[in-house]
Length: 253
Length: 188
Image (cartoon, rainbow over all chains, first blue to last red; front, top):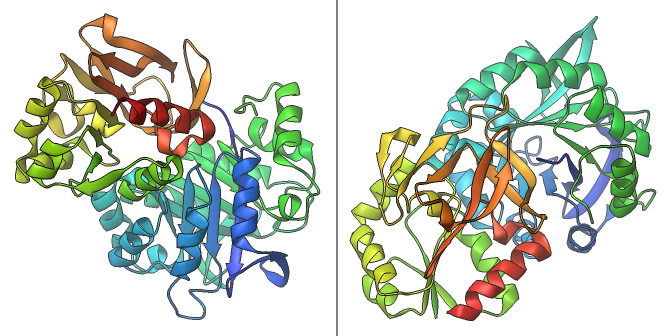
């Protein structure tokens, strides 16, 4: 049986891991290489690396950090931040990434998603979608590190991006990000039930039962968290033991 | 010396990273002489069957691989590299290498395709990382040495003589995957 994935996330800026609340007020959370090693040893199911200021600073991703982090892990490694061209994607895959996530660059130029998917296969193209609530049961896509409201509904963009070739969706709820009050169940359920590709829920994990809720009620295929793991509030082995006890299928330690 | 076959497709870097950690000697190549002189071959693969076969043919590797496998050289096919060993794939209606009898078909029972994530392999119940929309249907059931469920039961490991094919990615499957790779590199 396919298991639910637990994914730690390294939000990066200037070569350091950082953690914010609702995409602002960032504080330092450590060294990416040390954290990557820790998560690999703790049997994380995957590792996500996002250079969260590459787009707004209009620069390329910190490639050397990607390469060195990739060497630490024997699990799938997904990288994003500032991807604007097919060449950017090729470079990141060669640096040791298994998947590349596309956010602002794909929204501005949807053809990029198709080009990347045709060249490398949809399984390595992850749509990174940052959504914020704008009305009752209505979420819009925000780009530029959550700074700009595109006016497009998250549901519509998720469905479009899958048609364009995205093989997975990393769905971050800006409203719940860093609040530690639980994942956004409504949003995740809406998107996950509407698309034919796996959805990774992100934003808001605060305690172990939040993971049960996002899998059972939110129909998430994977759940991502950052500060909980970085600051050792929760370890992945403990979380997995708990989830097994709650009858959630996860890869045992 | 093992050769990881470079046919312009797939995650060569990840396979190389894993072999580095295992301390195995390897090179990444599509050179006919280097392939012929190596002690084992790995055909990795992330990507589509149509492009995969086209690229193998463009580099005249299709005939060479058949010959090398016939000679008894240890061979590991990963994911698409396993699927290409069979006769035909539904993906892009592709005629494949035909070294093993059987076809490759698409998952139809689960709503979410591709399958992405960690799934268990029977009989040993170890978990490995899978990313696939298609799976192999070997004609000869006796070559199936591992099976996995994704809405339907499929062959996740096949082995026949010097050939080992795995649908999952051992290079991305933590300690369980590295153990399997080590077993292979020990044969080379």
